[in-house]
Amino acid sequence: MSNIVAIVGRPNVGKSTIFNRLTESRHAIVDAVSGVTRDRHYGKSEWNGTTFSVIDTGGYVKGSEDVFEEEIRKQVKLAIDEANVILFVVDVSEGITEDDKVVADILRRSKKKVFLVSNKVDNFVRQGLSGEFYALGLGDPFNISAISGSGTGELLDAVVEVLDAKTVIEELEIPKFAIVGRPNVGKSSFINALLGKERNIVTPIAGTTRDSINTRYTAFGHDFLLIDTAGIRKKSKVEEDLEFYSVMRSIRAIENCDVCLLLIDAKLGLEAQDLNIFRLAESNRKGVVIVVNKWDLIEKETNTTKEYEEKIREKLAPFRDVPIVFTSALTKQRVLKAIEIAEKVNENRIKTIKTRELNDVMLQIIDRHPPAAIKGKHVKIKFVNQLPTHAPTFAFYCNLPQYVTEAYIRFLENRLREQFDFSGVPIQIFMRKK
Image: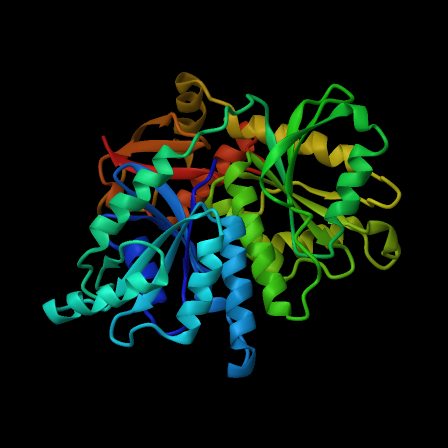
């Protein structure tokens, strides 16, 4: 199960600085993902061997002062729904404000683990001042200075202890497919078309949140777990909110799955938000199938599938090797086909190529198309093997790894895809000194 740590609090208390410290400090960084929304508010962090996602909810508050309290309430409630641990940040230089009281009130009533973080404690006097925050009724404040990093180690130790103590649900050894996409692309209809009236083939399994439902599907020779993010909540008046909800919900679903079925609306095509979700799946190294839903509404004469596919692949570049399936949840057209393709992608994701076969094929290709010499230096690649990771990863051993260009690594990736079929799966390549 994925671990999510959410940072909440009113503006200007240093949430973004804490976010940057957790996702970019030399100790903590694993991977910071850009482009989840317009700014970066989602990152990966690792501390003492525990990996978790960090979400800074602050970057999503839009609107004028008069709607601020309502916005912050929504934001905090969302964090309570989605996160395992919440960091509530307050500013020692300003003391307790009315907005802090609003947030504390909501958090006290939640059943989530909350850490009270007193930020900007950068001298001895301020350490004393942070005693005021006991009045919020959320236990001992952690005194930190996000800018200098002092105190963040103790905070992370405490966070990781809670995450490690979480009871791990016994995972079923079957593929997990997540249905993801923006609101209103037809996720619910797609799932209903798939499950149909055959309710006897469905075993409900407690989901991670109120409305993210995991369902075991065992019909027509299939057996997989469906992670449904369709219940994103009622439509909000604020588009910004909806976008944030769909991203937050998608993050958890993507982290918990093996393959993402990314639904897009045939009439709208692949939009920026779809691309964000796609990049999220790619950076988490999950399998991806693009499902173009509502295809029955498109005039066949004006838009052949071939042209439509090409447009999508152009936007997905450089990772273009992704299956695209055209469906209609309404007419149930090719809904099962989408599942069959997801199963194939999952096989691609977990397959292992024998080292001998890998070397026989790839070294021959490298022989015919060696890396270009740089500054008179010739790169000689002698050996290749697949690393034992959760998604296809290959190490190429050579004399001068530092001289291998990005373009050549892309060439190697494309040849691996051609020879061994890794359709729908991100590939990672490392050049190593032999």
